[in-house]
Image 1: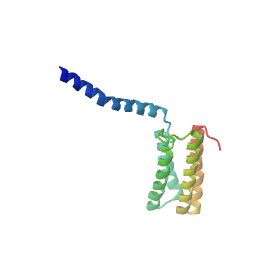
Image 2: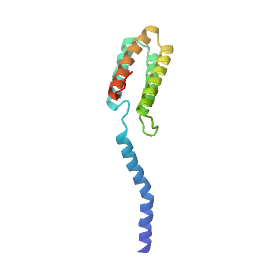
Image 3: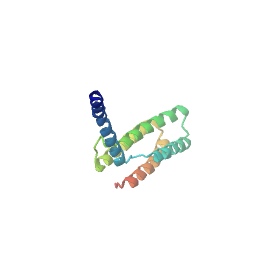
Image 4: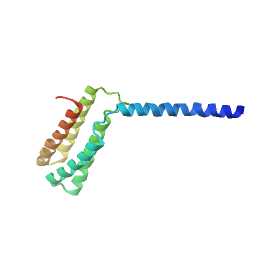
Length: 137
C-alpha cells in the first residue's frame, strides 16, 4: 500500500510540469494572433498563382519566386509569437523590414516589368495586414 502511494506521488510530480506546460501553451496560443492566419495563407497561395500568370514566369522562375515569397511570409507570420515578446510597434517594424528585404530580393530576381507587378500586388497584401493589425504608416 505504501509503495502504491509513493508511486502515485511520483507520477503526479512527474506529470505536473507537463500539465503546467500544456496550460501555459494554451494560454500562449490564445493570446497569439498570427500575422497571417490560415485563411490569409490560402489567399496568399491564390495570390501567388495570379502573380505567376500575370508575370508569365518560366517554371524554374515560378519555383524561385514562390520560395522567396514563402521564406519571407513565413518569417512575417512568426513575428507575433509570444516567445519573441515583440510589442505591436516592434512587430510592425520587423514586418516592414521583412517587406523591404523581400522586395530587394525580388528586384534582383525579377525583370523590371515583373518587379512592378510584384510591388503593386504585395503592397495590397501589406495594406491588408496593416488594416487587420490596426497599423498606420
